Each structure stands twice: as structure tokens, then as C-alpha cells.
Length: 64
Image (tube, rainbow, N blue to C red; front, side):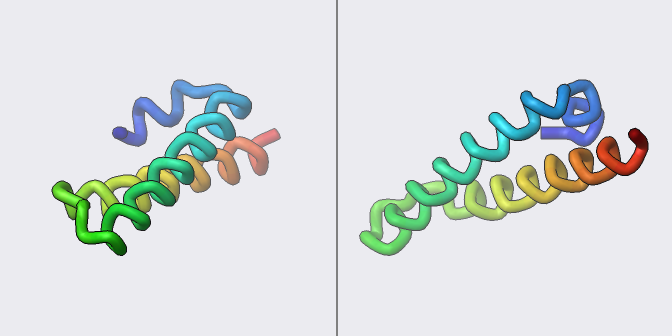
């Protein structure tokens, strides 16, 4: 997810996306622990996407 995509989202959409990514992150951690994880770079991508979303949420909250 690019930052330009994140900027287009509303506050509610950002919250929903963060929840969705956190659930996926949890599932990937379980897969890694059980040795079933195939795409190891996906964990890193999700962590960075969550950070992008949180950064935009903070920036838009301060702008108001």
C-alpha cells in the first residue's frame, strides 16, 4: 500500500484497514511459529503498512 493510497482513505476506513492488517499479522505469526509460512516478507510489508496508516491517522487528527 502506497502512502498516496492511504491519504485517500477516511478516518473510519483507516481504522478498518488497521484492524484487518492486525488480524492478518496475527495469522502470519501463527503460521511462522508452526513452520507453514511461505511468504516471509509479507510480515514486513504488513508491519510497514500499519505504520503508514497510523502515521496518516495521526497527521489527519492533528490537522483538524
